[in-house]
Length: 229
Length: 312
Picture 1 (cartoon, rainbow over the protein chains, first blue to last red):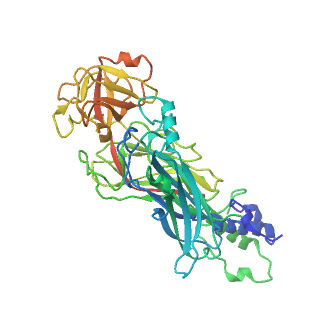
Picture 2 (cartoon, chains in turn brown, purple):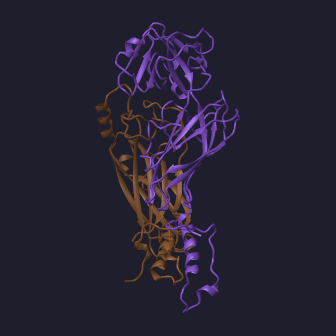
Picture 3 (cartoon, each protein chain N blue to C red):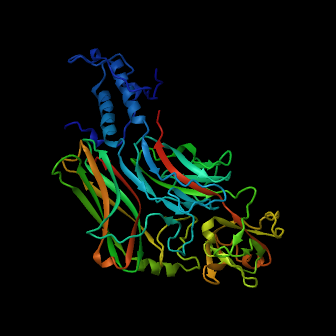
């Protein structure tokens, strides 16, 4: 069977037993060194971009327009023709990479059920005619259900979570307050992407039916390259 | 020389002389040892895990609010307050700790604590404190209007995981000496009471309670909770216009998180606090005692960086 270091998931320091002898080094000892090199190539320096939109956490009240702080990026109505750019960056993607992964945290407020669709895309820069690789993830948004949950929890303090932590990112909330969501997506790279610098970005659009009654707001996004299999 | 069972790591990534690697020759133990030490160094090096940057403009000083800042900004409420969504970051397996550095402006000489929750710490702990390995205590040595550096090493990480979920929470310490800033009616109107005998107290849940004044109705601004306040309950009031009450608190101070029941447009006569009362009898027992509206610390962050520490 061909030796493939990608079968290993964690690096292990080479034990000194392997070389404390006058005998020629065994192939097993050398394989440990090679495995570490493979793992280092797969699991090092994977960040592509990280963004967290600035927040003014000076109003922790959950009965205002913005519960647990005021996001400094306004709420908007993204659509297919006019998507919201959530995050982007440039990254040299190593030859070992096979996928891109992204995680997006966002908020929605409104009364109309809709779908927020996030798309992770990548394209080599400087390559004329390069194909845009993309993967979309749909998140159903049903803020009316969150409002029902609000009524069930009771209490004067609308939207307070049943924990001991305050803050802007405890979900869900309800009523007129934005509800927090998260979405993850994974994009399988094409042969054009590894080994060159790529432009990587995440967009969001919402179904047309939701535009009239539900607003969207990105909070944070992270993206990394990954080596699978 | 390595000790039995303890791997060696080179101090710098080294290269072998080409003479050691002649084609067809057996590889000697010393050459393998050099390769192994370099390999161990490579897999043991830390790397960036999280690096977030916000605007460092509009640095604020005590008593001043420059409107909407570009930085991550907030108040040091008296209970852990989550300031970032839980972000999943990559880390190299085999590394078991993070180092965190923060560029923060803590107004005056107040103290703000920052808790970094990881999978290894079980996320954020509501009971974490100064002695926890994942809590940074941020206190300026003097009142300067600028961002200062604070850092901590040894934050637990899950050793063999290739990812870690990071959460950040902030908590303020009650300023010493206690500050009781003046409060004015909406639109810069007349001065409003910062202390008075409690007329009615509500304890609707374990997470929230409120004080509502009926007889002498104050006109507190409806956004008073957005100015960084906490509520003390004391046995006797402070002198009118004087310093904060010297009497001990009857309960742990609560963070002012909302203003309820507007009296007229833009004003309120109800203070909503977190957490709730400690026992059902407190709501009645505190009637006739005195509330005091105090100030909590204020902070801004323009950079938050987290990276895995070297293994060797």
